[in-house]
Image (cartoon, rainbow, N blue to C red; front, side):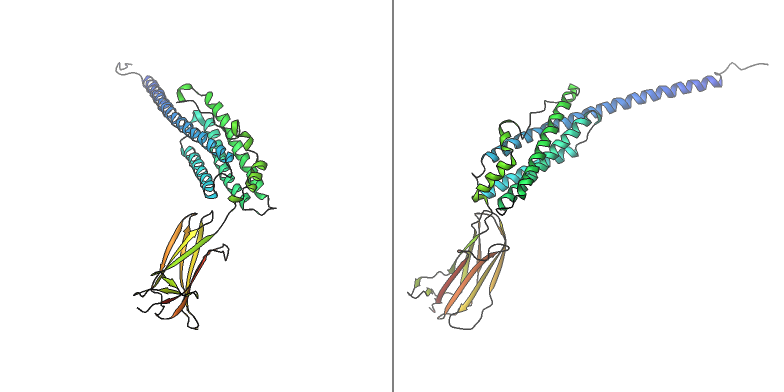
Length: 336
């Protein structure tokens, strides 16, 4: 029996194909691992770069918060509220940036600890703002804000502890993954440590009467044209004109933003039962120290007659009356 000398045996071809497949698998595996390594290395560096930036931001915020506690009572309430709101917003934005960043396997522990730190700091500062306002606005025997203040400080302390552990975990990483050293950050230790006492801070806040919420508006007004003389009996003379208007200025003399300011103008002929429809306007809000000017035109006051005009400003949910929120004028329009 004769056998062909051409081509390897079928079993040898199968073995060779298997070897080729194994070699290809190894090569592909090595390439995948290399790509994964480079990707994880890049993602790790990117995350740690952001973490260092966030930590630096919190170092600055810790300084700002410490100086805020030191200076309680030296600034007005709107400024205090704005500083707290800004700190809370910045802290929350920093935490969100970290949570949105891709976390690679080598820095999983660091990322977890940084997330706890950043979110605890953000929660603590947000809670702190609520606690301070609650204490300032509380009744004398209401101490519920004190407990909220204690919770705020505990959250901030939790952030400090988590960050300390994160810095330790960074020190254990491959040095090639760490673009720069993590800064030292703490809110509740160092020179400001004595200020993080919720009992002492609450007592200081209660003694700051000027920081208690004050809702107040003042109103002033003048006719257009303006009165020129008074007859001794309290009746003012207004020059002849084609039309008559009342210019009303409403000023926020309190220390918080007032919302829903209603301005009502009424005109009444003296010694007459004739009624005029009141004129009303609504101002959505006025910031402390700011004013709004309204013009009520075409007032139906006839020349030669005596009228009383009244303008009143009220705040939704505020005091019904104050000593400076009403204007009244008794006048007579000249015919010529």
